[in-house]
Length: 136
Image (cartoon, rainbow, N blue to C red; front, side):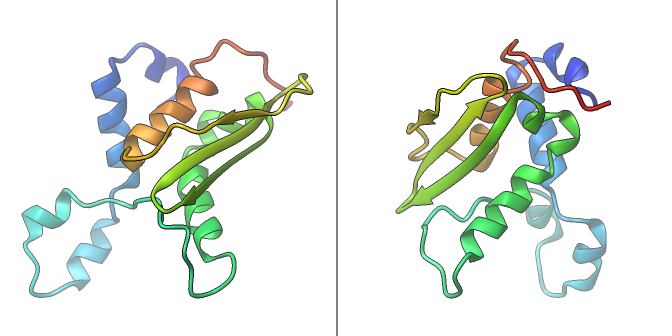
């Protein structure tokens, strides 16, 4: 799937793509016993939104790994930096658009699902029409 393909889809279709991309590998399902396989198919990776961690950096690395699932779409090409932080269920997106010195803070992700937050990242990056850095 390319960003051009995603731009042509409805919001619901993009959300479904995000859920599928974050779904667990079938090899995990095959190794689990005593689970409802139909219920498991609806599960996917989710952001750690509490902000609490047993080991320093645990939330950051977990959440960054989820964002990185979409790096191949070019979400980072639009920004100098892009960082998502959570505390007590409230998410804040920090970014700086490529070629712009303004720091942007979007503090609106309390109560949102992982899929909805990733869609919002898409809106601020690959759907934004902003300029990108040259990668070739």
